[in-house]
Length: 373
Image 1 (cartoon, one colour):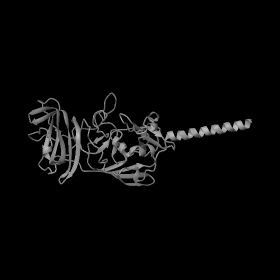
Image 2 (cartoon, rainbow, N blue to C red):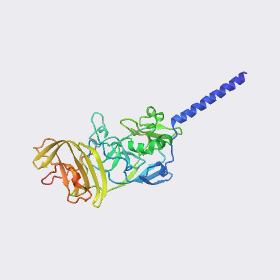
Image 3 (cartoon, rainbow, N blue to C red):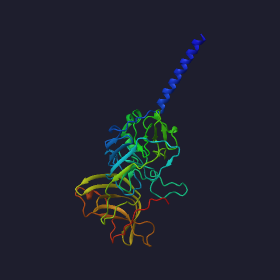
């Protein structure tokens, strides 16, 4: 009788242990890990190939056409999303190190649509107290999808790619557990819990926003709410993972255009191909600026609606920094309006120009330094 009772007790214990293990495995998540095929990526990624060491793919660096880029930005550098030629190389043998590596302003990974993912920092000066650069989201520099165009006219995300995650949908994210991207240390990036609260692991993540699945595979998981963090540091060894070729925009004098930041709230953005180049048009509200109208006269602007646009080096309307003068207080910008070679398909009558500068050419101003200070 005692032996029978002991055996029954053993059976119950084994059953409970098995049930616990099954529940643990379910809660720990078993990730989709076969990345070497098109199904892991959206149509914007191509030339996907793997060898024993690396996963490689290419992209133009632009998301699906249904993603509304640039809209919602309150502070812009006047850059626009142009087509690039990226080649990405991701290690297939990522490691987890004891010592974590801090992220810096710049790329930290790439999304499965081939759009780079950046650290949340701006290129602004480091705060002497916090030791950090300003946060792009808090500075109003990001669109509703979590991205913007950088100094190289390169569209990239600074927070979780919200529009991409919505495009991928609950089945791929929560059920099939496919990644939304890869960090430059090779670890996948996921969005578990974005659609299904039962999959949330926010309180289980390490300091880098990492977690280990039931098979021992490490991954990062993005934050579901503000500030929509992607990863806070690298648990693996970050590597140089991308190459790029592209042609920069230039002004009428042949100088490379690296936009100047202005408080301009973008309400609409569009781009279209023409016989004289790709036109990029933004409509928005210039919140506060002092504009140079003539060499000795400025005009203060408050909440004025108008267009920033660029088609080619002889067809654009953009803001640049004016030459400094003792009689001018504070920063002075000017609206450079050039329309000598605009395509017919750019309907200028439908655009709202700001008051353009009239006078001798202003000196070219090199881009501001991005070094820590």
